[in-house]
Image (cartoon, rainbow, N blue to C red; front, side, top):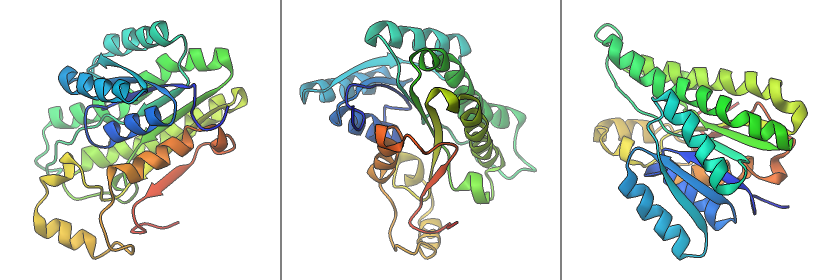
Length: 248
């Protein structure tokens, strides 16, 4: 089996942006996709779009900050599709503020969604992957988990933690042909970055060697590769998709 054809993938944050692009690309590449996010309407629209093009997808509304919902959703996905091969932990939020003014609730919310939820999803998905002795876990981290960012102590910490989680789990499950990798996007044009001030975007753009902002599909193609059969000898790796702004 080449690529991701015939595989079953669960993608969180699939209602928009990078998650939507990942889900759509995995589906057009032959995977059956469980679409997870809070916005049921957007999920159903994407499912209809995928199914209308001959793919196979189903919406599974999910608030990743709810541990019980995570467990029940993973069970429902496996019941629906018969297995779970690929987990893409993409759901994420921001609650930006300078560290001296950051409220504890804003710290807790970001850590819960961006770091604790991927841990819980991995925990819920791993048994099925261990049983079949094959799996792909791809965590969407961020360049700001690598270099930090003013006003994002919570976000940067959650994304740095996700890199550590990636490497730790990769060591634990590698012997069962399960790979665990991360993709670290740089400046990507999404709804999350649309609201940033124009002067910030211009300043950031000057430091990108490729000279342009990335797209959600740039990230999706990296995710699809790491989720594929061909990436079977890559694990514990952080794949930078940032136009060269951070190298090494």
